[in-house]
Image (cartoon, rainbow, N blue to C red; front, side, top):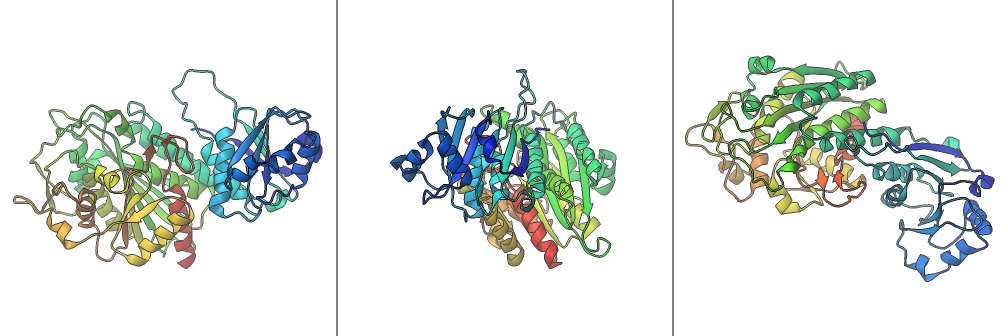
Length: 490
């Protein structure tokens, strides 16, 4: 598990500023007014900070941007990082400022002087989320975790416990998505989820014989060409007001630990990225970890279908017909449209077993969603406007891009099969929508449901809002917020 930087909140000690040997970070409001920490830095540097704040360089900085003053005279620090930030900064701006701090953070750590900033916790969250690097398989000497002291006049008023719980959930998701598939097999994935029991999560692993008994033939069809056994892992966090009476929220994740495309094999170029095709299951896992770490008052079940899609003599062929747990038959036209086959059975099982009050599935499902929305937004599909709006508001509040796309009978008609109840793909156009329509066939009319296609947001080739390039952990923050909002209403 990639560990967080060591964050702490301390009393503001002006005398300690001169002797701190790492980075010193100081927040300066756009009007250029110096807070007590900034005034001490200005005195130590013989007016250098004030000269910078009065310069065109500071004027050109956008709010939340930062600039380094390297090796300042009169201080032991390796740099003073000046962050342009008002005391009343919004959540998004405070986090963005934290991202700037986290991106520059080195082993020597930092002393952060936020002054009278109202949202110190949001600054800390941005910092923690950005300072991430997946180094589990690098042989270089391990680096020390940086220590970051946030010095404020009233440390008792700043509580980082929620921040750290959310960040650890995001890191858990990122680690899972970043792992190579020879390490994160279906068995290893399940084992890592079993470890959540130490946090109070109830974890149950359903093996292939149980899945056969339940009739999860569409899920099993995906993994039958692999030597890795298919599994479904059920995680329960039932800590709401009345867990015995209140139906839980269900989170369902696609966990294809590697996707070759099966017999409909993918092109070689870029196939190495298919280690991230379990991103939906990774997000569900990260949400469950955050809920446990912050001891959330909520009733939530997380279910992930873990499979590997490989070509083999036993692999499912295009043209095969398999029967789902629901009882519907599916003609498999393209074995590379496998995620929906996994989700179909897990969605039905979640409803049959838990009768959830609402259900969200997450999957790196379609390249078509990336064509439609790029890497800025996940695709959102829903059968319930109120539920969907609750999620969209949560995603907007957390700065995680999400955009609703339509569903409709015309798209559903594209899934008609001549030999089965449906086929697993439609025509080329509207691919993200027809995939969502396929999933909706396994959602009961009375179940409020959201499908999140995170193909474009789970892993990025450039830094994201809160992440370096690579796995983002998209959705952990938004789903935590949505769960909190819905739990308050229950």
